Length: 323
Image 1 (cartoon, rainbow, N blue to C red):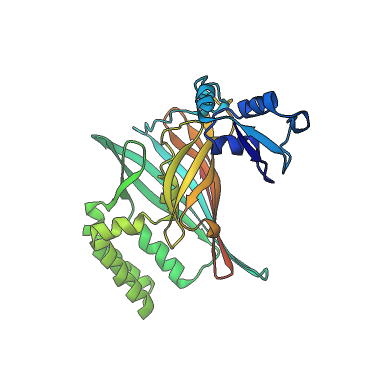
Image 2: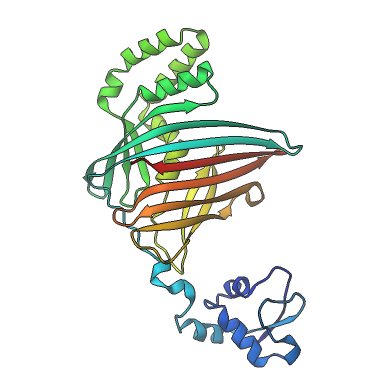
C-alpha cells in the first residue's frame, strides 16, 4: 500500500480519479480496513491525515467489478443525430460584457431568430439551409445596421455537417452569388458613406472566396455553439469535444456530463472546461437540452470568459426553440 497525506481540498473522488480507481467508495473501504483507529474515515477527508492507497493490482481488481456510479447506462447516453425532414426555429440572444478590475463594465446585446431547415442527406453528411432574421441590437449604429443588412442579403446559406452534426462547410447558394450585384446596389443606396462602401467591398471579397467565406462563418458565435461536437460518445459518464471561443479563436476542450439521470424524452447536458491552452485565462460553463428522438438542440445556455490585460471579456449565449 501507499501512504498519502491528505491535502486541503482533496476528496475521495478526486484522489480516486488520480489513481484511476473507478469507484471511490473502494478507496474509503480499503483505507478503513487497514488504517489506525484515529485515521478512520467517517465522512469528509481531513487535511494532513493519512490515507492508505491500494497498489495497482488491487485497483485493477476493484475496477473489474464494473460497479462505479458513472458506469450507469443513463449517464452514458447515445445521442444520435437524426435531423431528416426537420425544421427548427430558435431565438438567439448574445450578451457581450467587458469588465475592468476597478469594477467598470460595459455590455451590449444582440438578438435574432434562426430558421434551420434540413434539405437532404448525402452519404454521411447532412445539408441544411439557415437564415437569420428579426434582429435586435442595443447598439443601433450605422455600421451595426450595415453588418446586419449584409448578412441578411446572403440568406439562406447552406451548411454541411458530418453524421454527428459538426460543421464541415458553409457555402452560399448559387442564386445568392448571382444576384449579389443587385443586393450590393441596394446596400450602397442605404449606406452611401465611404466607410460603408469600403465595408461592402470587403464583404464582397469574402463571399467571392468559397474557402474564406466558410472559415469566416465557422467563427460565428451561434454556429460554433449549435454545431458543436456535443454528440460524441460518452465513456465513464463523460464526453468531450473541441471548440474555439472568442474573437481570438482560443482552442478549448469541453467536458459534458448528465445533469439528471432520470430523463425520458430530453436530456440535459452540463458543460465545463476540461482543458485550455490558457487555463488561467479562460472560464467556461453551460447547458444543452437535447431531444433524444432526433438528437437536435431544444435549448442551450453557454457562458465563457477570457481575461486579457486586466479586463474580463464575457460572452453569454442563450438559444431557445420557438414553438
